[in-house]
Image (cartoon, rainbow, N blue to C red; front, top):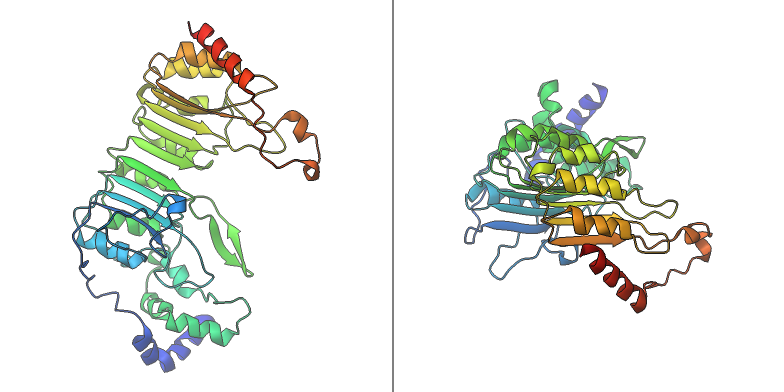
Length: 383
């Protein structure tokens, strides 16, 4: 209570300045976009474009939406948008109320008129609580005085929100961005979902942000009536994949799952009968081989996923081509038309060397003769 009383006393003297410096009132209706209603949004916040990351690829005539409010207003006013592709790039130390999250009405909720079919998010923090953000005194620099921190709190508009939300109940103050999204957006039409690089930044303790679990996206599942394509990254996705209705996914991409060839089998089996394409990969490590499928496990995948057309997987090697695995691909996947294989580049011999002695220059260690021998052997075994 002492901290709250202190802030109220300061606000008493500076409320007029805050009101003058704050952006347009949150109660004001969103402005209509000054452009033809689009059918998709592909942008990076802040900035609008960052094609090197695969986001922000605009066509001539597409609206320029460099802020979260721009995207929010467009979704609120347009009913034509079917795809949202958004990357949130945290490029500065300071924060504003809607700098990196949508300015959804808190706690009463907002409503977007567009009914999306594709949702591709990179870096959006569903765990963030608007109340916690309103109460936080984020500095523009860690070396700023307390006075400057308070001033930034005022001029950014955060103080205005904090004062408005002070009378809320405990349950309302615990609402997260995910709660507000569930009120604002209609998820029943989503067919393609790509939640990537979700923030794992927890509450600040002693100036340090603690790590916390991934967002509880399983709460979305009852609303995902038409979901058929899922792209995820990280160990958190295991429970999400298993919580989806059995054999509901046609396309699954899961990178950095933390699973082994044995432990991933029952997870993939949950959707195997309906899968048309599958990507399951792990990043290479300096200290051990990737935990890939054995030839028998790969054959089991072929049996339980008979309609698989496209497969992207890892294969390890030990001085030669993994012929046994390749033979399984040629004989156990009757409908497979596209196979992408990520071969291991680091050898066991190299792992036994000190990293300071590594030659980091790219080495293409598969010769023309080796490639020719591989193709000839593969054709013989496929025949």
